[in-house]
Image (tube, rainbow, N blue to C red; front, side):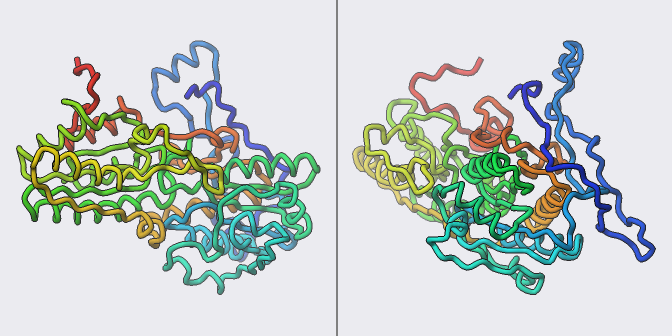
Length: 446
């Protein structure tokens, strides 16, 4: 990423002229510090790179800090807001919905808050999905449950019909909660809104359990996912050490990025092999995974293997490729593949093993958020409300260098954050597991 090439300007619907009602005391004076637009967070953190940009006359790229503004664009007594959750389930969705509703209601005095049922399909008339009136009473206890009370769906919907619905409902602020596909759809919604000359703000809250959204340091639900994945690894280790030549095989989420697998392996350091999409490995051969696993069993008598769902997809080349409703390429099941290949290999060398396979994916996705994610969701949602009420649009609320910031949708949509095979995270995984390259043509470290 080249920080100097990153456009970080946040678009607005117009001048914010209304004094913010947030945290006003009885005498009308504000009880909180408002966030000026001039406060920014540098995109690049490396001092040498920043100084080099300054020497070259390049202004270092920076993000606008999130937070309440002293003046807002929308009149709280008249604005209507809508919330939609899209894509796969993730811990914390209900926390996001709840915090948006509470901040709009008690922070700004907004009364017209609508929940759109079943993702973007909820905007399309032919589905005939009801709209939910969201009040504090409706969302009071939802954070104790997993999933989303609004429901979700995958798949593209007609952008024109979505904006038609926003117009009919007289929505001023749309909060979209979803991953990369939702961000892409949100940018198209913004394009259509601009084309029609409408004053509708679109604010995204990035949702991906894989923690792979570009320009976002952390996404909600990730900590809960790592915690649950760690419990699965603990179970796999118990099973592995309980039998001669025991192997605990755990498949975790991570279509394109192996952050859950890497972090869970570091959290529960009983893992011997971590397989992620970013790091190639061979199955067979002297340096391949199966031979290395055999060596581990001969040496220690047990092994724990963690595989992200997107790892090893090269082994399925030539097979039929299918896509889901959102257009994502359907991954082949690396977990079942490895289970079968491991069993076949050790049978071929007449070595008895005891293999246990664990896939906790849906248990993790539908689990309520833990305490840290509860807090994180509250910050994200409330900052999204502050941005929307100030008339800011075409942005997502991100977390960058321990600060909540406004990230332009265009800087993030269509891109992906991945593990750097030469970076500190993967090096730490290698140190914790003792794992080395498992390709037959690798060069030794110098």
